[in-house]
Amino acid sequence: MIFGNKQLIGLDLGSSSIKMVELKATGRNYKMNKFGMSAIPDGLVDGGEIIDPSGLSKIIMALHKELGIKTKTVCTGMFGGAVIVKKISMPRIDPKLIREQIQWEAEQYIPFDLSEVNLDYHLLDSNSSAETMDILLVAAKHDYIIRYFEAIEMAGLKCALIDVNGFALANCFELSYGTRSNETLALINIGAGVTNLVVVENGSVVFCRDIPIGGNIYNMEIARELGVSSDEAEDLKIGFSQTQSSPAELSQIVANTSEMICEEIKDSFSFYEQSKSGAPVTSLYLSGGSTKIPNLVDAVSTATGLNCQSFNPLQKITWNKSAFSDQFLNEILPFLPCVVGLGARRLGDS
Figure 1 (spheres, rainbow, N blue to C red):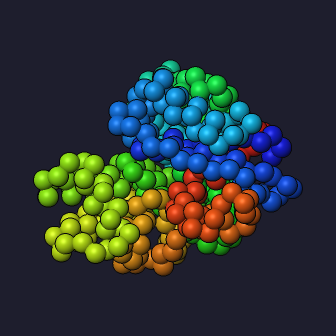
Figure 2 (cartoon, rainbow, N blue to C red):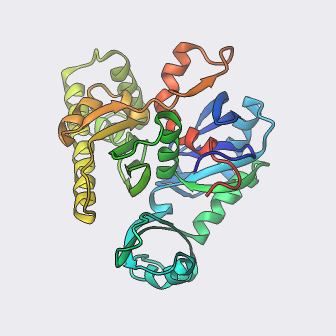
Figure 3 (cartoon, rainbow, N blue to C red):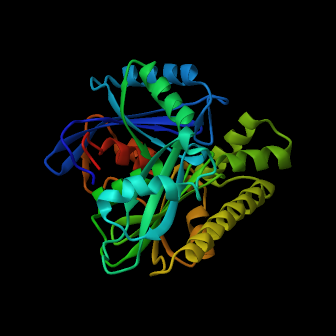
């Protein structure tokens, strides 16, 4: 699922920043040669939808040049409102006929005219004796996809693969931790504007949902409660994350906001449990820049009742020692899982 021959740059186009990584593959092992991040100004990307491809392309081009990456072929990921991932059940048929049949089945689940979307699917089960089969249906609108291509190709790069960010998290987990047979686990990436939640059962993604809430909600709540600007709210949030030496009022705002995020995550787990019969989730791995918020990991663990730990994407990946200090690696670790999952993809992957 992860490994292949032709190297791609991993490009994660988030709501407030882009991440770019170059991984060198040697057999089934990877080395991180280069990584960089750049902030995205407001108005370029909104919840996974690219609003201004031209403006975004300039940031992509500048980061690619700054990192000095020679490879120009890119794998990026879609998320949020740009993509729909839905688990469906349909009468069992010959696998060779699924692609044709899926067009008819998708009409029940996709809230757009099917002429406006690209469809793909992944067969989840191999129990040929059952009367039905479970399929993970993936759909994205043509105009959303085109804007991803435009942003990348106007930057002088080639968009070779478009993945789904949730699937990239699962790819990175398999690369870092191996396939966890007979186990159901959840991966959650709390981004700036969207939180990706993926459930992986026996090594396969069985549930993928993007929650329209993320770290930016802290800024909004701090700005609203304290009457400060967005930039001042961001500075207060960062200061609190780094020192926790802040007024009690700010601490309470952060705690209340963390509770809001936890409630959204709990609701998504409830949706998963209602939509699928099977083994419950037993462990949870968290990533994303917002995991730097003090006590958020513990709050998610308490809210879900699950063993919650930080997602370490570098467990089995080496890195260029001269390019990455221990301090820098510690700072970027929460931002890596998605982009590493994208960078580990190769042309010809399924």
